[in-house]
Length: 142
Image (cartoon, one colour):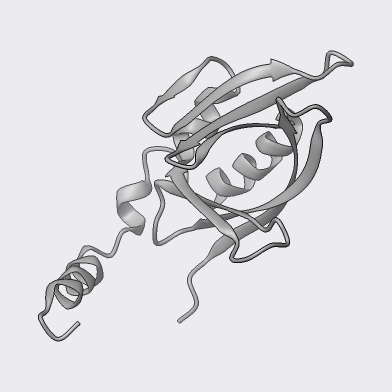
């Protein structure tokens, strides 16, 4: 059975370079992993880069700075004054600050919350399946 999902392309601008770099990322939300959003950056070189972070970060980051560790999200504005969301991603390889339209992020979140409303996430978790997968990963045969 296929898991219900929301997929969306998100236009991003990489900030901090001499010239801003425009790119597209794919956002993926799956109902069977209701707390997370996967973001895939395909830079055209090598394997796509994947980041997994809490969907609440995107929502809260529309209003105020939020985040711990490798992912921080904060509201911003583009040169025309239109609202944006800034994603601050850090890894051992470096730091990237990406900016997206707040309207585009909000449109994605509206679809996500229509599928799995806030506070209803636990109704979509299959804990038995998750435990089975953990057991398989820890099995000496794998």
